[in-house]
Length: 378
Image (tube, rainbow, N blue to C red; front, side):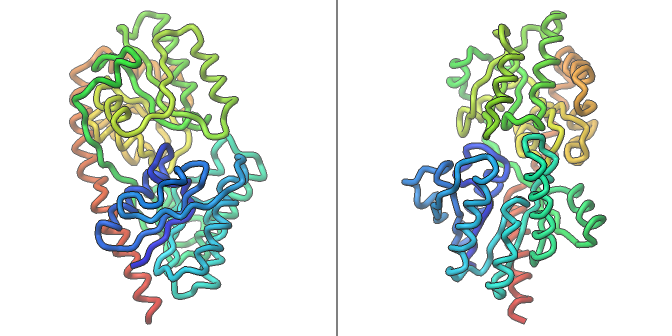
């Protein structure tokens, strides 16, 4: 099959769950012998990178602003795709999917697939107009796509109840490489099991401010047992929020901002942390959460439905979303109970390996493509 991906910022993934999801799918489908094309934004992927692990990258420009970056690039990608002979065009995320109807109208023999990753209109960074457009994109995606994929059962249920449409659940996956090396940790003066880890984009709905507030209170009460808090990630058109976080952490030597980290540096940060905290208030299905489980780490996560679909009392702890005091209690409990931390991490790893294998996810996606194409032939 000749398969194209539209909607993601690009690959290789520097940040973003959609980008990581697309990268894993594209590489594995290429290894299975398919021709895979990924549309990438010039402000995300190095223009010199034309092929990446067997995947052809198609570079197109975009209007570099918060509200127009994605849709301007998607417009050009959709127009370009009209003149290609793709068997499958797979849109990712509801904003870019607002233009998927063009493919359905003009490329009727092409399988049109949309993955609904997250209800982005709940994210606080967007204006009213942007949120309205994202809801429009969701409507277009669900109405026009040959098949809708959701990354969680929560989203599947939402689509069934609101739109009376049947979606296929194909979640995000886990493929981690535990690192014994610690050379990157020296950069931030970190030791094994000496820090609590947060990984994610620094945008408000990810909830990093709740974690920083909780850690500061515990540190003031001398309850951290000299643990540090490491914040891994960067913003995306969220400079004001990043300044807010750094102001909140000002004067705290044990709160460390590493910026965005990838590959071996990120693997080391995951591999050697004491526990992982995921305080997000809105998700589809968090890749960072799944990766923490895959690394065998105890997890504390907010109690939104999407997180509770992943973790249970055997694999992690949860706290009331937006409640930093409840988060404090969970952090203190796990700091004081290293045996529980070890047991939760071991069970989390087994759960991640069992339920979130990328190979299984790719096989399910490939099968879905084939089923849609067979119906097109008939």
